[in-house]
Image (cartoon, rainbow, N blue to C red; front, side, top):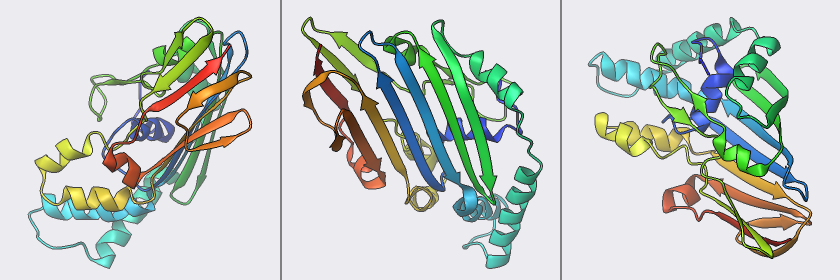
Length: 250
């Protein structure tokens, strides 16, 4: 998938997948399973870039060789610059569909994609259908060498594993963690760690699975009927959150 410089929803996806930037961030990943292991999945992302204005102003001042925290005027200027850039964006649903569909493995389809803006707050929703839940761990978002961001390939549903144990079905995954690369980035520039902590202060990640099977065991943080929720925040991710695990009786 080519990530054009002016495609903010793709920036959101990259943020989800471990770039060391922040803001008020809430990410929800959902899977709804049928008995034949087909189903739907969704990604719902809300990013408030307002807090990043402080980080941008701080970095710009540091790169200029000037010590000290940014002034209110410098923060306001950074915020206005971000608003001006984002105000120029146009949501082209047809283009977004083409780009997402280009990265989907065989057996998956894009059901819907939506994007909305309010000041510096962005919400992106992507709904997917799959023939077999194992296809989710084949979905990758790639970036090309001519992009401003690093070349990489990331998977929104991480290392999702579905193991048929005969009479039971085991599903497990590692939590999606945007903090993974912050330590390396912090080593490149003193003071970044504190900025990252501030930027990620309101981070919230939710992974949920709804399935028709009887639940044998799980390590979810919350259960509502047939739906299990794994909820993570900054503190739990910094401590090393336990991976997702649920065992169903088929």
